Amino acid sequence: MKTLIIYLSLAVVTFIINFAIYNFSFNLQVTPFLHEKQRVDSGVLMLKTTFPAYLVSSIVITLLFYIVNKRRNSKA
Image (cartoon, rainbow, N blue to C red; front, side, top):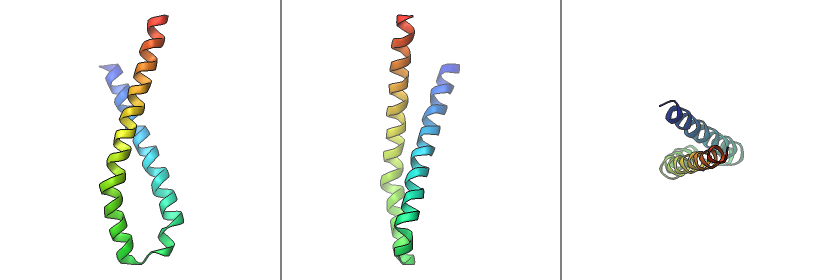
């Protein structure tokens, strides 16, 4: 159970970091050049596409950490 919590925490932290980096760079680079309606539309599009993509990314990264840890522990 402890291992599951550790890997779930890793997935959540990875997801938050990925999304924060994307959101920060998007706001810094694009937002000043958009009108209000375009900002709302791009925000909805970002939630439909980027949110699931980063969720999948964080799960894949967590699975990679799990596989590497399992191999490392089996050799020890």
